[in-house]
Structure formats: C-alpha cells, structure tokens
Length: 173
Length: 72
Image: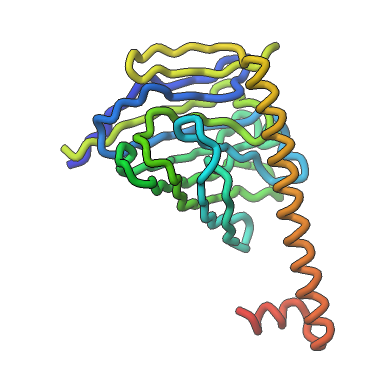
C-alpha cells in the first residue's frame, strides 16, 4: 500500500505575498512526489480568464512538453505548449477569499530518464456569469537528473496571502 | 514592499523567506515579457486560423456551426 509522507513543511504565504515557493533539497528516497497547491494571485486576470502557475524542476525552465485539456463553460479545448506550466490559479478579481486547487503528481522523480508528470487544477469563482476553469495536463520534462528542487511561480504577480503548498513523498510500502 | 521568495529546505524542514536578488528581479521581468509575447503570438495565430476557417465557410456558403459539424 502506498504511503504518503509530508516532505518539509506546508508553506503558507504571509501578508506580503510571495513571488515564488521553492522546495529545495528534496531527498531521492521516495518513489513518487505529489505537490498540492491552494493558490490565489495578487493581480487580476486582465483580458485572460485566470492566472497560470509555472513549475520548474531543478531550476530549469526549458525542455518541457505539455499537453493541456481545458474546460470552462461548455466548450473544452486542447492545446500543446513548451512552457513549464503548473495549472490554473485564481486571480485577484475572483470571488474574495477563494483559491484554486492543484495537484501535481510526479512518478519516478529520482530516475535517470526523462520525467512525465500530471497536473490537475480547478479555479473557484462563485460570481454569476463566470465559469470555473478546469485543466488536466500531461507533461514531460527531459531532465535526467533526480528532481531535488521544485519551484512554483505565477505568470503574473505574486502568490497572495493564505496560499498554501505542501509536498508529499509516496513510498511503495 | 520588496518581492520575496519562500524556500523550504526539505532536509531540515526549515522555511525561510528571502528578498529576490536584482538578478532574479531582472529575470522575472524578462520572463513576464517573454510569456506575454508568446501568449499574444498564440492568440494571434488562433485568431488568424479562425478567420481563415470563416472565410472558407463563407466561400462554401456554410455557417460556422455547419462547418464545425462537418469537420467534427
């Protein structure tokens, strides 16, 4: 039976916000990693419908391939991108005190092969006339080193107060 | 207030909050510009594609819904 063990501490962003959240010195002793993010940004979504988190492994922002299935309203869409994406995030103009929910699953993170990983994310928006956004992403990072660092940022602005991030190691037994 | 980053050392469990360096701020600004450009290019390409599709539908005498049905 798989066992979830929290690695490090849960990060809760303080009143000043945070430009990034960084888990460093991740040990290679687990089988898989799971990162759970509850987030809100400090900037509005502007012309777009949400903010996007970006995810870097080992400080590298290149050699990612991401396939995204996105649903908002009645029409799902699919796209492909080369950027390190980390799911959809509530912007500051979303319903007050609401946060997006994201889970990032990285199997075999310590292997010497390229790493595939998945991201599921959903925003929360309770105002009439708005839709929540759901994203399912299948991604590949071509790095062959064990993942020992995960950095989360936003495409615009900072993580808002009370955003949280927790990292878990999964052991086979 | 200066932008900060939160660092969790997973070996020690220590959580620290440090200000971004000048280099990191510069990189962040460059990343934001690059991202905005990539996004704008992507949106422009999508708009051009939609326009081309609409022109074809128009030539064929089809509505966009009819064309979508045909291609679906």
